[in-house]
Image (cartoon, rainbow, N blue to C red; front, side, top):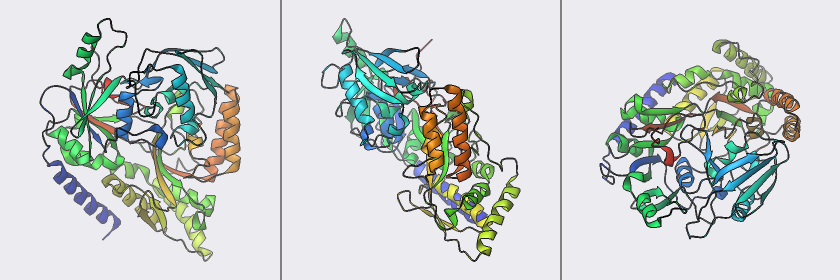
Length: 501
């Protein structure tokens, strides 16, 4: 059977399996009226902490609801207030001063600037496993100026720092205790979220009663992708959150109206990172050959979603809009797929002509419907140029590993830092030195030039095969007027119903 035939058969089997899963009846946990009902793809862990590494979409949504950061995102993906109700930036762009709102931890103790400063310093400490720790290299000090005022001082201006501070993983959590804007309690397999009463209310009893109004509450349940969509289809959920490329085939099999799908135009990195440079992968030329071989448009079209776009560059295109330098297009960008594959095959043939073998490339991709489709297309393109491959689990030893990350801010250095000298990437010292020079430069023009210089070196080294933009999607009933596409792929639960004008 041909690779295309195997793919078609695999796709039909996955669609059938997903369709069967979507016919499972919901247990009737939710009623017809009352709280907004959200089904999230993935299990819920109320004890999930930013200190333990990457948060699942489900746990990030819960954390963002119960304990936002100094600032937050609104339903449009724009910066909104959080624990800080206002802030100022000094004229040199190096000092951000936040004034905290009146807030209490879940044990009733007042939240102080001293608490917040200590929590943020813990997140960014050298021994921390916080997922964004490496994205805050410009921070010099974090200090409490008074009980209600905190200052973050930077070594160089960083206009995009608010976007980092608004990420759910920057939630201000104190030993498992949140402060708001919502509070959580378990009801069976779900979490009931209700607004935190206004601590400054003149009538505390009335404020408590308003906060307990079912119409102001959200019931959040974590479950499998198939069951989350089944809940929506059967009327037991108003929305589904947490969708990625890996779970899109479940939506295709659900027969839910396409108009209910919310796809975020989120920039970032979606592609294969070279984990080792040995054997065939030891040379820039061979890594470049694999990068040229992928027929990206064909791959993306296989998922049947026109909003999903192929990507050729190491850096997301969003940085053009943020005032940074335009991403560097690869040298082969103007060639068609057939020409690129012919160029790649010549490199492979030259390697074999020297009497050298090519061991199967181990590619770490999630074992999911979308993951199997992705691998089928990549493997077919590698086979076409004479390179064997096999899929391995994400946690296994691999030669290539999928990176699927939304850019947390518009810093043009984010993608370059992410692809250089990390645990799951190769390390080119020349590129890394240029990146570090740009990070330290306070001159905006010089910094922009250094970003481009670092990108040129990194692109020549070829540590990464860009494939497409990250795919993030949700499903929303008409009731969820606040769940809209946005470039941060952030959908705070306290904003899923937009406030009336």
